[in-house]
Length: 236
Image (cartoon, rainbow, N blue to C red; front, side, top):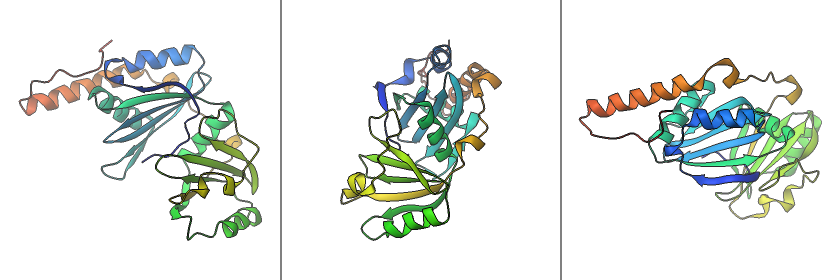
């Protein structure tokens, strides 16, 4: 499961099976979209981040093998599960600062993972973050709700909760998802946003050939198994 707050909804729970995703993502590029696309399916969850129309990051977390993929491998996996017709697409608008924060989080290194907050010493963790001047993201979550707190060199930058598009100045764990009885916590070490080199994955490669390759491979796989299946997803 990939836990991220939702941001401002643009579209939610859309079936991408009949959408030519490279074409649709080209519109996000021309429209200078800033935010993220989330794809959820039984196989896992995928995230595609846009910054002023540039596709700066893609990430796929598999529910089957506990594995992760990034960049074009993640895009290909997202295309595959979209064409199969079992995924749901939601689109959320965010501020530039939050997009950079999520970009850093998705590339971060776990220091703690899925800690039960009823047994975890949050105060000691916060003291350690301050004393060691850590740049981290604290993720507090249940199955239904997620909140993030970003720290830069030990200083709390702010709080990202469900439905917001900006980093909020309040960063109080006690007033957040942490109060819920089944809350868990991740502590992820992240790079300072100023140190991250932003790629433009759509500027570096045309996504159309990746889309067509995935369709061909899936069609060949069905033929090998003698299945008469019409793949979803417009060819474009």
